Image 1 (cartoon, one colour):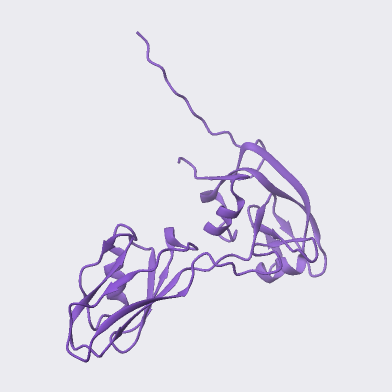
Image 2 (cartoon, one colour):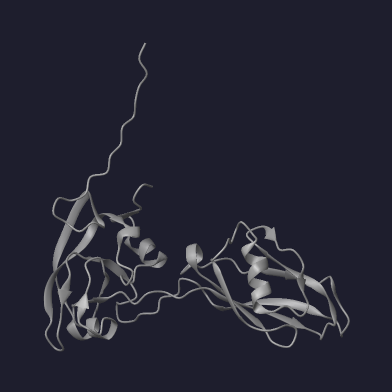
Amino acid sequence: MYSDLGVTKTIRRAGGPTWAGEFPVDCAPITLDADAVLAVYPDGNIPSGACLALNTATGRHVPYGGSAEEVQTVTVTGGPTGGTYTLTFGGQTTAGIPYNATAAQVRTALEALSTIGAGNVATSGGPHPGTPITVTFQGTLANTNVAQMTASGASLTGGTTPAVTVATATGGGTDLGAGGSETAKGFLLDDKQVRAGRHVDAALYYRGRVYSDLLPANSGFDAQAAAELSPNIYIDKVGA
């Protein structure tokens, strides 16, 4: 008696960069805008796997402008002298956060939520109650328009009508570029070097499979780019 076996394998494009898979492969000839490249890569070396956009005025390709991290502020008002407050994100609520919490204490409370996790928020400002604390979403939540946290100050004491509020300062995923650089079009196939005023011919990888964990650290690729490149490019990870 035999059982059916399913076999899968990953095929990478022969002779191509490690980040590019064969799923299939489609590339197009482009011209890199030297001055735009130098603004992001001052030494003139733009790596294979750099995320590119199209400047609508010049028709030349430029480094993708990227997108913003979500930034929210937590403010305690009413001058409480004791008690705690809570924050809720993704259906989970923190343990009580002291009325006079530091930024580090707020980060610890948020990272304890499985909907956030360690390393996925950074905090600054504070301490409460006199100064707001800023929460920046990063890591697996980077460049993503996450839901605004909600807050409860029901356990704050002292002061005059103490309360806690949350406001969104910067929406995650907001495009930072302009003139076309805000929209990802694909990836630079091979390393290139440019000099001021000397635009360079290159190839744009615009359809296929890309292993995001093999892209160079300075590729400029982010979650918003992944959304913009879908469905022409399937974003994968090695071993996923």
